[in-house]
Length: 349
Image (tube, rainbow, N blue to C red; front, side, top):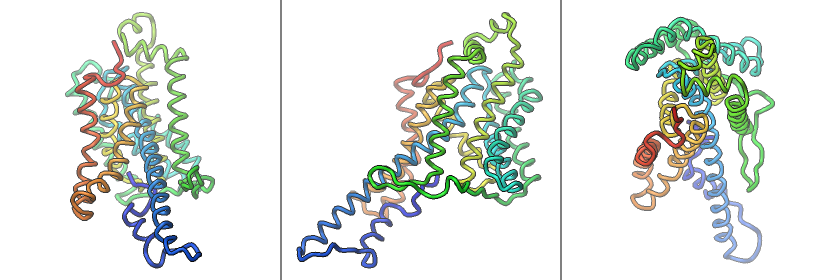
């Protein structure tokens, strides 16, 4: 996940303290420049730390949108859906296509929800419905085949070149936060949307009749079928809901990076890590797990090279730190599973 700052911490410090960037306070005190440098360096490091924490939070809520749908589908339907990342890609391409045709990002965002939900419902009714009675290996093979189908169909429709989404004018630029940190408004909007979706999902699951059926479906699918609930319709709704959340994530992230074929697979791997950490079938677990993964990954990439630089030198620390940072979330997962084998908030059923 790209960070907001286009410069690494070392480069930013180098630019700040380069001769062209120095601005000494006026006065006769010869110690003022050194004192000024220390103050500016401390302020910059604090600002970078806050910025990276916000980047980690933004990454985490994006992963939550992916993982929430994935954990709902597995918890209610018992299905391992490897094609979930393809629905993320469908949302991104639908948003880019509609925004390109209409000039409106907001219409593109609505299109991403509709297209991903429709694709999810269609896939559930035509392919997934035949897999409920099969073992997980059959589900894995079938949904992997769907990845290939979605990728080739998208390449046929849009070509192999990436598309680009513009950030809507209302959310362009940066705003000042406490501590003198300037942070992109659009990334803050992603954080707000993610937190809003988390609250909405909680209310849906805990306070509505549909949520009651979803919770019952996680615990005893046969019983709710015997009580007269249309289990097929419930499965389609859950699958479409999960697909819509993935499509929303793809559309919002599409404005930060290029929209291209295969963009959903790397995120899918992280989403599986999230639901394993949080507990399969738990929305609360998906939320906590996503924040843990997002912040751990982002802060690891930011802090590890700096910590290692004090021991082995900046050149070696950069490469080794990046390699170790990429392993951190898997180390975190292993440590959590060693203590809580079913995840932090496993659903009992």
